Length: 165
Image (cartoon, rainbow, N blue to C red; front, side):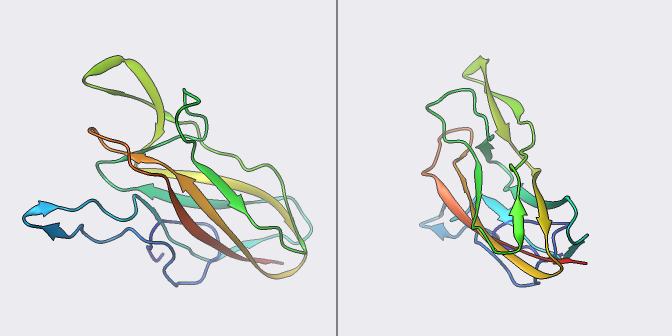
């Protein structure tokens, strides 16, 4: 598995790096800079049955020290994590399945729980595809926060390459 600005397993993808956000943050005048990306995505090949309902699994990893809002945050003021895929001839995608978030609270407001993703999380894409090699292009939009602040929303490019046999 190759890591890039994110992390995908079980999905046949080329070994090229996708996205941004790995590596350590640069320092400016002795103060660590914030990373450019907060979610890591990588790709590896996946094979599904042609013409049959199958599930592609996209694995993501939130950088240590950060969390991102789940797909169903507890407030309409929070930006949900959302995957968008471009339509492709020969592939019919069903509704994307997001994992449940984890309750999270800050020490300064312990009674208010947010619904977030931390560490690794998997987004599942149900598909039916004709036989052959396929590529799905898309993006993951998310908003990352740490214990002190939330940062502007980011969009992480994703590319899912798989074979339907």
